[in-house]
Image 1 (cartoon, rainbow, N blue to C red):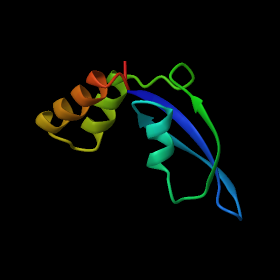
Image 2 (image 1 turned 90 degrees about the horizontal axis):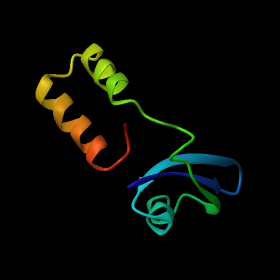
Image 3 (image 1 turned 60 degrees about the vertical axis):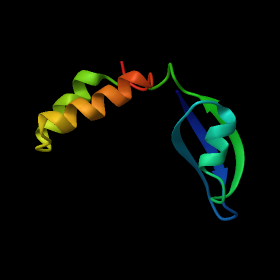
Length: 82
């Protein structure tokens, strides 16, 4: 998976949505129905996600070790976090 920033115009406002997806087409599909897609940008290098910081945040939120392991493994397996 990759990280994409999708820029949308809903007729009143423009906004951006961070989307994990396998490709640009899947990112566009994810936001379908929320407005006109103006642009899609691959953001893999712009917004790195640290697994250590995710683990710490989950511990601070009182998540259990099993939940932390499942979440961090999914993020790592899908190349969302490093």
